[in-house]
Amino acid sequence: MIVIKREDAPVVACRLGDGSELEKRLIASGALRRLPDGRYEVFSREAVNTGGELAEAGSYVKVDHAGFPYPNSAEFFLANHVETDGGYVQRSRPREAWQVGQPVSDAVRFLLDSGRLTIDRQNPDRYFSAQLWGTLLSARQDAVIVFYGIRRTAEGRVADAQFSFVAREEFDRNYDILENGPAQGDPSHE
Image (cartoon, rainbow, N blue to C red; front, side):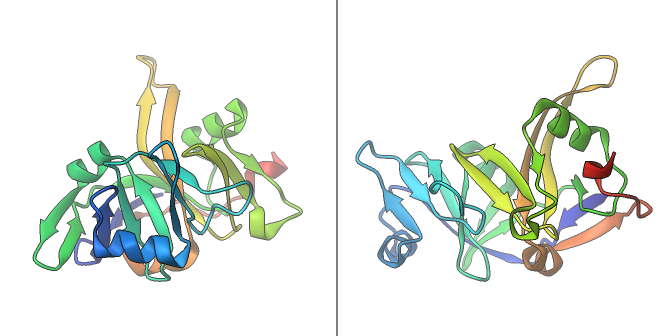
């Protein structure tokens, strides 16, 4: 499936370490914690296992409509967002994505075969799990996997993939599907 983030969706974000009001609010609410080594622990919706996602000072944190923060490296954030008077907007680019019921793409197969993505069919609340941002993240079965980069060999095989989980309500609120494949089985059945 090919998706694109809606450009008109405002992005609430701050640069970690700048002491912005947003950073202070996130710390006060417990959604963000500054660690003794200067890094930050970011408690996103998917950080439900062993701790928050780790982010460096200078990285950015975006906040979804439900108030959950998500880290972005400074490089990724600056390359993919534009500052506006009221905050930021994301530069939209078509991206590969996958959800349960879609044909298993070669990128999803690569993640499953390499152990970078696991599926727990017995637990729909923690159906997907992956080690991302320094911690084990989990997402519900209805989440969407969005790929931010797929590196291929000269022969076209997937050599690496950068991805994240997007909660269903965030996906429905912020993304448009440009191309959708036919429904198919769950990869854990193959």
